[in-house]
Length: 126
Image (cartoon, rainbow, N blue to C red; front, side):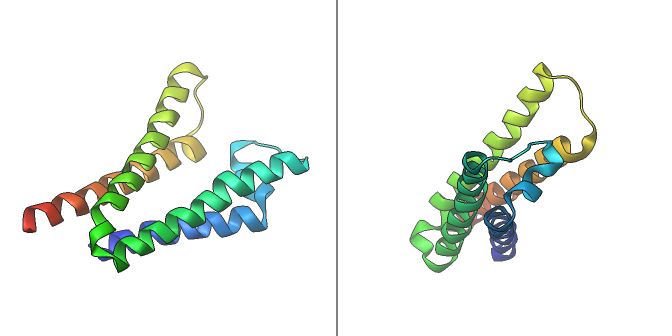
């Protein structure tokens, strides 16, 4: 069960570091152009800072059992919300190739489900 939390945490940490170091490269697959300091700041804040904060929160979930289920539930819901936003966008926008939109929707859905499963398994054991 901890492996799931670690894997999702590593994903968020990697995204966070990549966004802080190279914001344009991180969002390039989405055809987002970050040519101004304000747009680079936004990518660094939302993908970078938020990603690192989520990675730290997942680390706290492992280190502090009393926080575990609440943190995993919150992160799982955030991931599910991201996936839902992609689905809504696909319903109102023109169709796109599988990558990057559907790929990340799948990653977010799987990660959300995995974190939810960890919480449910822990609840059934206690």
